[in-house]
Image (cartoon, rainbow, N blue to C red; front, side, top):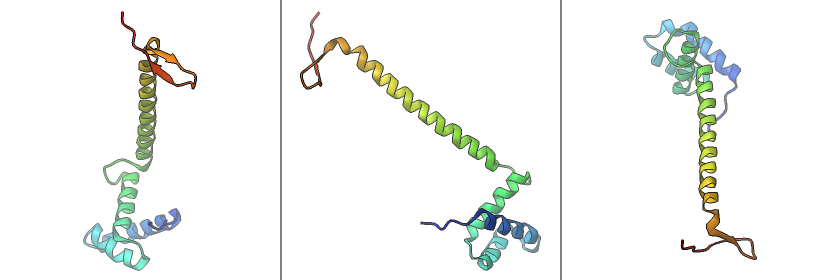
Length: 115
């Protein structure tokens, strides 16, 4: 299981990276060097820095708040689709109710009616 890194530590690492980014040829080289000093994975640090740049408007992409909003909307959409499927199944079940009859143990038994 990956270790949880406190948000304050992430922010300090990102600030350090952004302050020293101009000393390195590219973002990847900076992340590799600084992540070794801080004890993080280079890819984790790179993702945090890129997200900070997006949030600051320095890079194109979805901000953290936009991503969270999309995640919430997708979750709500999935819940509504599940509810609709349940209602659709219930409607099909109850539309067939004239062909069902209760038995003593309260289970449905399909009866065959010929019209």
